[in-house]
Length: 98
Image (cartoon, rainbow, N blue to C red; front, side):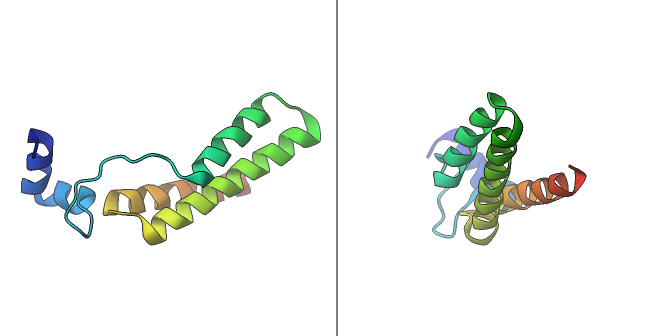
């Protein structure tokens, strides 16, 4: 166990945020399919105009919503669930602002 992992385990708040159900410390993990798709669609939205831009923008927002709902419901720790909730709120509010 390294020093960071030890501090997280010893700190009640950080432990609740970053410890998983099987007592592993998870701070970051590789992105899953909806995040890869959102990134690709975002890049495509940046380089297109008109209807294609609108379609790619809609697509990346839907991908982020799918990712955030998955994290909110099945995130490995409290941090991932909170992150999912924040992204979901931002994306839904962004839909109504535009």
